[in-house]
Length: 131
Image (cartoon, rainbow, N blue to C red; front, top):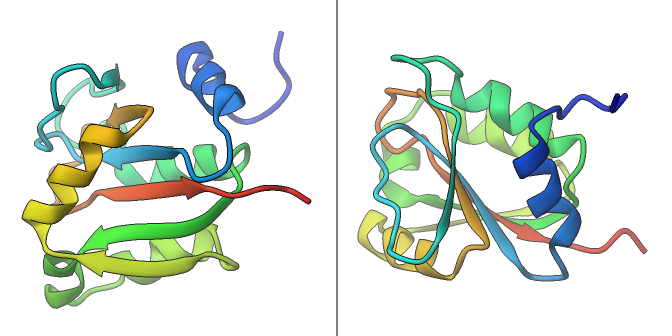
């Protein structure tokens, strides 16, 4: 049995297959998944699992050099952008309008759907390298 934090075999497999600059999206329950993009649907019910819980688990296995969020998330205020950054302190945090964010998800290796019901609780993780 696997010893690391991330136990979901499909998500672990996707992360293991990622190369430099590949992207992985951690999403709230409402973000649309573009045709052809793999969806790892973890949503069980409203707010289960939570966005930050999934992001925390992914951060144990994925090296991210850049993070992209919607400008609408930052405009809402609150602690979520800082919480996202805290899991990847070395990564640059960028923001783009939500419509552009959704367009960028079409190039993702996968979208991980959580049960999160907080508006704009989405992040694109841009894979880095460990050397």
